[in-house]
Image 1 (spheres, rainbow, N blue to C red):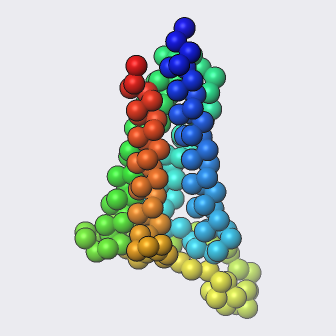
Image 2: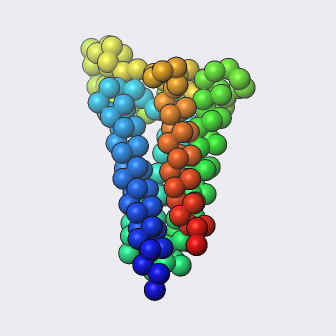
Length: 162
């Protein structure tokens, strides 16, 4: 058994697991902690991370060949997520049109008008073509593209390296 390859694959799986969990935790913080309602694309961009977590967990316990397979699958999913995020960021920069059916996602359902007015003050609705938040000029969708590509690179490189 090649223990160096197994260790490298386990490290990649662990990095994939931690990176995916932290990325989702960040998205949930913006949603639930700061009141940003995710748009349709924002929610779709989370799906590769939801898939990467169980794949990474499998990669921590499966034999070498199967670990390569699950890391490769995770890499493909994250590459899709990175591409979707690039599309989303491009729509935010008006480089191309975003989806026509994209608006704010589901938020809290207030029980009366007073609650509704309070919810309007604390909730920031983001549509697909407007960046709700930027850091160093990069929107959340842009950061997601970078993170998804980095994690895909880690998983894909580990899966392909012999």
